[in-house]
Image 1 (cartoon, rainbow, N blue to C red):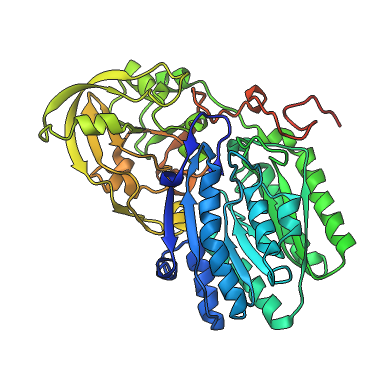
Image 2: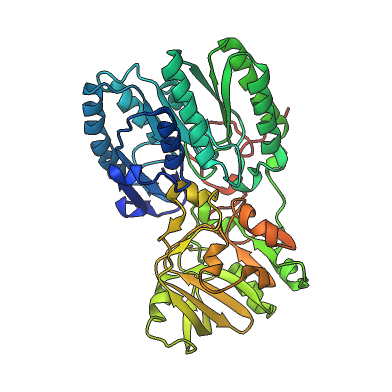
Length: 487
């Protein structure tokens, strides 16, 4: 599992992945992850599960091909042995938007390698994908049923794994192998345009559910919004359909989805507000904090999480009781010898993106320190879908304060998908007046219920919504919004 940002210089090695092997995978039953979803269905049907390995990464730069090869070196012998012992089927827990230094479709490559193993060519292969997967025709042709999340924010990752695993169960029980068709559209949307509670994705998901009900033989329809920072041929919105019925009817339904995406293409590029104007005109509310959402600094999309634009604006207007989270391992390390309540001047943020104005020198008071380990409040959080509900990913963490600004400094980045990230450090986010949120859409499940208002603002960062400004080299052309396309 990895979501690869192709436009940042970072390279992702093995240290960019959390790895679970063998019994560690089986022990994930009940942790709310994709793997938990599969294991739940496996238990329901009394399957003997042969666990191999899971490499789980976040959104970072190109993955070194050696990581993919290391994964395959663990999977291949386990698969060969299982085939000798009488394997019935294969289930894959994927993201779907990985790109390596040598391959733009390693998920398709994985399926190709599996199919090439003697005895695996005709086995049913089912799996689960992130809604932001790059669903390619190759992936569709080499598997029987890849099912993508329906929700963004991703609250249904475990549920989607269960849905796909039940399709595997159906196949094993009936002996009927469904067909899977994939269609890639002529549309790319930035993450800000892929929320499913409104906008074009809401309409597409609704149409997908109608197809499942109305077209005979259709078992599942997936709308993969794609990950716009993947510089690959098939990046963007794509559709998959799994059917036991008429193939022509299934393909016609896919074309209908592609036509709808085209008609709604401009709605997938949402408005962004001027940051300075929003903060300048800010008025506190007794109904909850105001959110300053900066998708260009979207941690879940691969941004470094230390952009200073929002922090600078809050400092410029001396906003009282504001809060931001900044990824800055150097700052955390510098605070380790400072007593609680002590003061220190240090550079904060601005180290991870060359177009950022740079670090901000601040005198701060140390409020608290921790190891950064915490339990999620929401077991349906997208983070739970990847890593379970107990997270040990932030590294050493510190809370500091400068005038009216509370800053959470973390050693590693984590998308802001759960309010326990704040509360575990002794800060109640509901009592803050304004919060900077480094996200695009995924934060909404956690933050929107406590917010009095939310503004998506323009800032520096690698996850820009202006896709035409990115130096794509591999993408199919013409495609919206990179090319002038009418009709």
